[in-house]
Image (tube, rainbow, N blue to C red):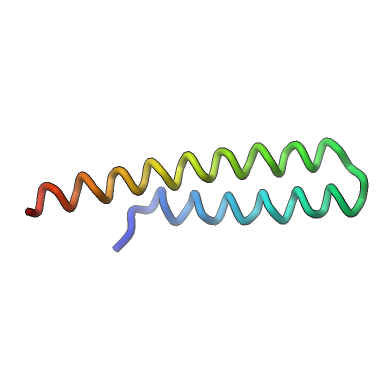
Length: 61
C-alpha cells in the first residue's frame, strides 16, 4: 500500500491543476498562482511519500 503522503500529494497536485486551469479560464492570476503552488506542494509531498515507500521496502529486504 502506498504511503499516505503519496496519495495526498497526488490529490493536491490534481487540485492545483484544476485551480490553475480555472484561473486561466477566468483570467484570475491569483487563482493561477495558487494552483501552481498547490502543484509544487503536491509533487514534493508525493516525492516524500515515495521516499518513505522506498525506505520501508528496503527494511523488509
